[in-house]
Image (tube, rainbow, N blue to C red; front, side, top):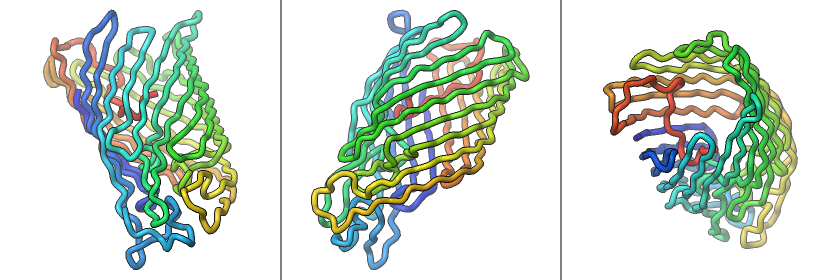
Length: 369
């Protein structure tokens, strides 16, 4: 299967702006009563270009904002690329994989995970242990090098290591519920250590419940906690969203259907969220020299409404070839990611049975659970 994936989140040029192009190639083959895969992702990420005055800037990035550095005039365009590789195996009960974050990035990590699922009466249980990259910004995902004259050290390349327990209840009727509880330690090169706990749960009602057609409406909630706010981009920070308190409610609506040679899925949601962050020193890790100051940020809190829209369609061209497209848009305060992809799937043996419902494009290796 070959897929081209594009993601975009507007931000400050050179810092929080984020564009990623990911080309994925995955080969699947039967193995030992299950299915094995080999994955190669070619990833290009960009944070754009710093706004400068007299060819330099004093943005809060690395140690560029420190009064003793006279600003930064190198690495004004933040862009990098690399190739991630992974391999794994799964059957009805187990799944496991091991691989790397993109080689060629400033910081490269070993990543992977293992999951086991079972049933206790009518409740499905999934236990997962994993080490995954955080790919929400160039700093968090790829790492960067401090461009200040006194700096020069690498930092970033953040990974979350821990486990989760997932629960689901759906007996095929009109109602279903799910929940996921997880805890992770978050680390990176020259980044302050952090911890994360998340509880997510939801209920859905099937307005239409047929083999080839389904419509659902539901209610989802999320409760997150991070020990520290490391969302900034100064040296020692991680460049990832990490509120001390976060709570949200969302009402999702979805419709999916398949015919002999088509499968599609459309949906969206309306949400409300509230978050709170605490104060944090600008440089939580020693940057390699004595800075003139190390101020602390002020805590903040806020709330707001948002929405998401998504659509995916898949078309069987022949018994061997299938083509698919997908797009999703999210809009919330200071968070406006958009995402699109196109893929082609080839089956060596051919397949003329039911298409997947909903369509199943590849997930970037960085976004594995």
